[in-house]
Length: 449
Image (cartoon, rainbow, N blue to C red; front, side, top):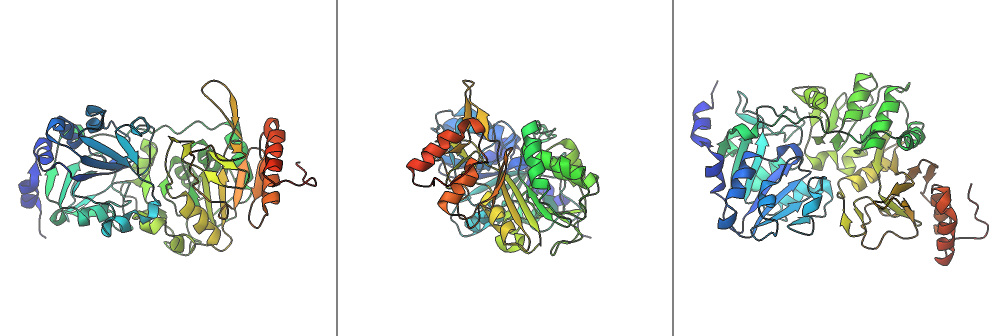
């Protein structure tokens, strides 16, 4: 069998040498989530004074963005993200910008040249005996980037879990131009703490779990509420559940360990847990490593409506930040303040509804507490000005708060207003009714439970 060690040695360079390949005006791809490089990022920051108008694209970064920290005014580097983590929010509107995206379309955008990629710099797992570098638990759109880039540099992290495909989960040494090994690169991604599960989360989860049937195929978003759903499912009598999801999270691992997930009733990828990236605990990453029960795919597969809808009883569960009285859902900003991103919410919400027996849920606590201590309703007459509609009103299926759930399909504006207001905190209902009356979407015969 051919060995690739000689080729490996020839392509091995230092991080400082690798970043010298970058020219002013280049577009660099730092990958997604666990693929963001460390040593290469540090080395790139050192070149700040030599470079101008260099765009760096990354999404859901979990570690420090050294190049952005070194250039807070954005004179040398422009940071673009396709989905904001807590770590990335401070850069938005300063030296960083959000790229609105339908997550599943990213590989196509890259291959068609809609998003330029000159240099790829991403973390990978060590090369295997066949010459492949695995992308770890985030395949997303990385193979597409490697295909179109002028230069491909991989930074080897010996601690990165190896995620089995699926497809497009690895890049071969023949497709790689340079390899970087550095002590800084060997980052063990420790537990990413999930938000604590609140009583409100559990109440919302109860409304959802009672809608789930044996053999359902699940997609969960991230946060305390999806974790609550997973916990309740793990304690339920449900069986033979499947998973076809964008994000693989700890809630799904809990369901699997409780014996609820077999995937045996899935129509496609039978018996496999299908996902495109993972975010969670060390236990989750250990579970992923070399596990044939899972199959990682590029995001244009996991998030394709035509694929999602092939599994019967698909169930999509995602969170929202605000909803207005017509049913428009904002899940990525509060006014002009950017919080996260569109992700695959619309793709899964629609795709699950289109499946035979499918159901889609948008969930949110009815209120939140502002920094000044004021309690604010998430259900509003209109979306906060500047806010982004993530899931449009014709698409919304079930809306859920701790006060109940409402199926908005086929409802008129009057019926929608009544149903949505019934899910609001009682302290805000009269105010919302008054706003609905002014908007002409309220009838005197309407009644709120």
